[in-house]
Image 1 (cartoon, one colour):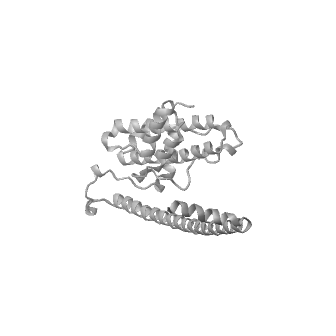
Image 2: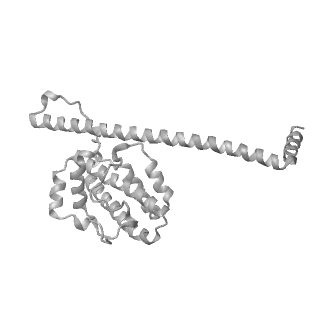
Image 3: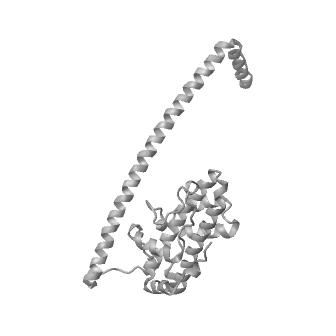
Length: 255
């Protein structure tokens, strides 16, 4: 497992220096989103009883948490209270410290905590090593470093929900913005609309799948009730005394 701090080379510090508090928060939200997806894969891998792969997966998982923790610590030192630790990163770090991620219920609880949606799942992740981990044949260790996480974030930052720190929120006067700032504001607004459209499509698909599932379950429930009725009637037909015993039981409980 690589040490994330050893990867923070001078060029990385230059990148750090160029990030304001909003960019830092976006980077942390992205790292936390990756961890949320990895945690889901970890739970799935355990359910598959893929024991031969668990130790190696866990080592990579811990490396990702360490990278996220390193970035969080650096961001807090530079920007102070302007930085907030994303929920999945915070929860998984606590779980790692408590029981080494061995308690899957703790991981599930972290994933179920959706009070803050700043680190939601994305459609895909650059450098995704965790999906289908047990089926991978290459045997190579994934690329895991602070620089690589930053590069992934740069490639996908437009897919993230913009983070707004309420404590730092000011009223925006468009008349005071220059052309470059207006173009950036327009770009962010346009990307946000596109993102909301994608989210709306996902919700629509989810609701459609949920409706189909509910319909199937209701039909299954109806079929099971009919089968139970047929089975009961068949037993009574084969054993006439069954009906009398049931009636006697009901009569005795009534008295």
